[in-house]
Length: 163
Image (cartoon, rainbow, N blue to C red; front, side, top):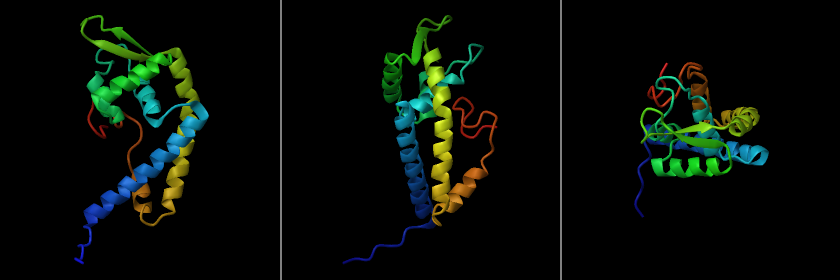
């Protein structure tokens, strides 16, 4: 039997981050599904698209949407189609470029998002509080508290963690 080398600190940190993400994602999924019939990805998509505006540069391209919800473009298109079929999103042609298609949140989608947002926030706080009790995850939870709030945040148009 051969001995396996100990993982590096970087590898251990990545494993801890992956574990934290998985626990948070699973907790959010259960809460959003139970309370609102939404998956985490559906909630994220509605949230990202609800922040668009009609002015210059206000609509996201599908690649930007895919980046923001961390899915491939084809998976994002399927997700948009599912939410469109539920009446939560609507697509329309870009008025200046007939090849472009915009996706907007419908009033029903905005209403569901407003109802689901407190559930998402509560579930996130619960998942982070539980993770903070784990000595391996506590430093990551503390680091999350240091991420600046407000501004454009993780807006894919501005790049990661833009001010």
